[in-house]
View 1 (cartoon, each protein chain N blue to C red):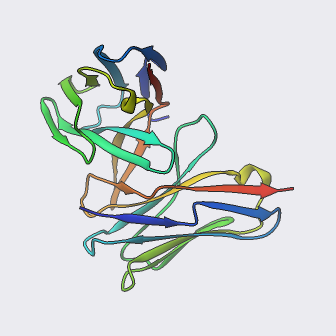
View 2: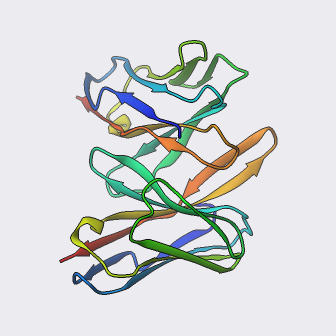
Length: 114
Length: 111
């Protein structure tokens, strides 16, 4: 599992409330990612980080912010949750290999916004 | 940015038959093409990948082919088994650090 954990694994929240999801890795990988998965859309990149305090937007970043104050933790925050943000959220890391790289996913967080 | 299209969206095959999933990409700079398998309620897991300097790669019953000229790549599963039932995602990477995913193919293997 490449040492990736996510918390919480399930969350139900109300529209308008802030929500923070946590991704934790134990193998000192430089790159970390947040994706959301929705039926018919595959995996869409929200934000990614390429080091402590270094982050950039993905294709669906509106309504989300991220922070990375330590190598091992990458936080995703929904400032004011909306029903359209009901989804399964996956964190991922990039593991560099000789000749290329591979991306590994965490177990996912199922978020329901009511 | 990179745009990856994946077909078909659903695929039903008889156990023992072959399954083929096709993906096209838009960015000619893409040089890395992984395939992920996701079982129900689980995380996506890398099952095979191919880089642009190779035209085909095999791993037991799974193979991937790449046609850079046409900008498409395919996943082939032979002798399908019930445990092959899952959602499969293709992806393409024009950079060393970012993947663009297809929408997924739900494969059902009928016993």
